[in-house]
Image (cartoon, rainbow, N blue to C red; front, side):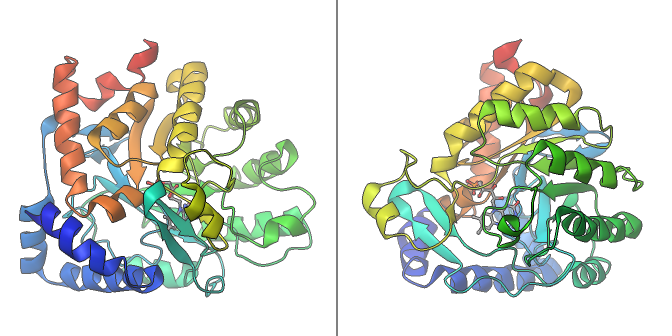
Amino acid sequence: MIKFLYKNILKPILFKIEADYVHVFFLHASSFIGRFKFLRFITKKIFLYKNEYLNTKILGLKITNPLGLAAGFDYNADLLNVAENVGFGFQTVGTITNLPYEGNKKPMLGRLPRSKSLLVNKGFKNNGIDFILDKVSKKKNNIPVGISIGTTNKSYCDIKEMIEDVTNSFRKVVDSHLFDFYELNISCPNLSNITSVDSAFDTKEGFTLLLNKLSTLAIRKPLFIKMYLEKNVEETLLLVEIASSYNFVTGFIFANLVKDRSNIFFDKDEITNAGKGNFSGKPTEEMSNNLISEVYKKYKNRFVIIGCGGVFSGFDAYEKIKRGASLVQMITGMIYEGPTVMGDINKDLVKLLKKDGYKSIGEAVGSYYK
Ligand SMILES: Cc1cc2nc3c(=O)[nH]c(=O)nc-3n(C[C@H](O)[C@H](O)[C@H](O)COP(=O)(O)O)c2cc1C
């Protein structure tokens, strides 16, 4: 019923309004729901699906289902009381940067419905690390909450200055003890700073310098690196190999947004008319899945992999799990399919696990290669 109402009444109306406004409206509405126990209870009753088959444990983190809200939706920690109630097992706040950034010139968001994709041109719009830490310190979370950290969107003289910026954020976050896991975002394609430094984080030299510096902090919670989608397998494996000698790197998130407009999964007319930005959703799925497979096959349990990109159904999530992802994240599927999709995905995951004779998500992880 709710799915029908969303897809046939609410979504057609919302999709006529500028995406930037709808996003802000949803954050306000959800934050409002989160403030009242009764509304949280109703939301939970409608959307949350629980099943012990979905319980999983990642380095001491107890997660009641493997589906997380990816970085980029709740960039200012407005949904901490609500994400669980709509069916997520964990969530990421951010990406947050050391200094605040008001966002790129509007429009920062757009829709490509025939391509099942969203245009993203935010450039890390956020209120800065100090604001977020203060806000989160006053809230309570029921599910594991992570924070994604990236570089402040500004020009730097050299890579050392850029590393100092990220390290400052990490230092504050680690000292705060407020988050259950960390994401290091080295892969945002919307920033202006990457052209102005001599060596970026995705090069062997830049990546090594960054990890060396972060290894001087006492990082004791799981840390995941959010990777580029469009690096080829060799380039990705080179960075993964470097990370393998740093014990504080728990794993990777494959992956971020699509930049390449010749990607065959775009509808030609839609992509020709799209404005400035990069893209999420179905055009990311195949590359995300390939990277998961390649890294899992080579590194098995050395890394925990989070699969992200183009998850719209239980089948999509299960495919990432069978390729080697222990957890899955999403944003775009929720926008297109509506707020019941997290429950639907989790229900379908249980059916798919049972069909294959598994009793838990953990048993299915990487099953293609066992
Ligand atoms: C509106 C929007 C904003 C995003 N902002 C960020 C971000 O700040 N940091 C980040 O690591 N990824 C960001 N992403 C990328 C997502 O986390 C995810 O990697 C990508 O959208 C693919 O997943 P999906 O197809 O389920 O949306 C953003 C995506 C969207 C749609």
